[in-house]
Image 1 (tube, rainbow, N blue to C red):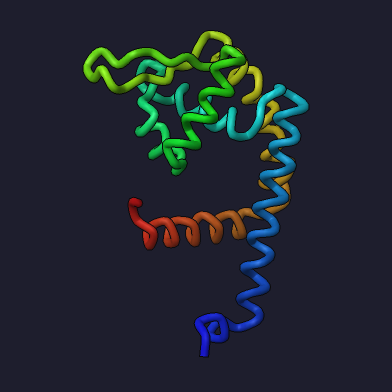
Image 2: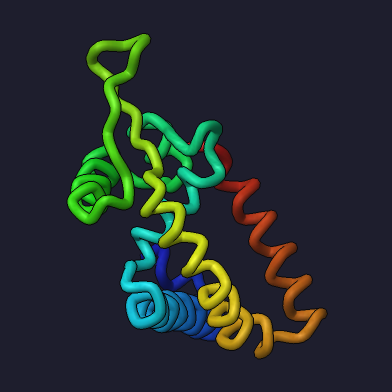
Length: 152
């Protein structure tokens, strides 16, 4: 018998609904960001991480850890964002091989302009749909799963 058969069909259905909701929600939020702020969800995620980082900058590895992205994905994303003036690369003064990724003034302006509309989109598509008990169940389940996964 395979591992799959040990999961009841109703649980598979719940898993499929969860994945479908996540994909569709992320796609909707990405489209809204594109329309409202002319940035992608990936752009927003990087901008927010840098905005929250000390001195609005981080090394590629640290940014990847924070976002749970591979270094190559971070590097490619940063390159695209750099060409649009949202971030810049700076040499690391303590490590000649390393670079800092820093939020530019344009990146900060873009992020701050996007935040209100993005929060509204999240409220409309998620928080306005789930009630307080459901939100607590999501919060609790997410915490348990994250605890099980630990640090990668």
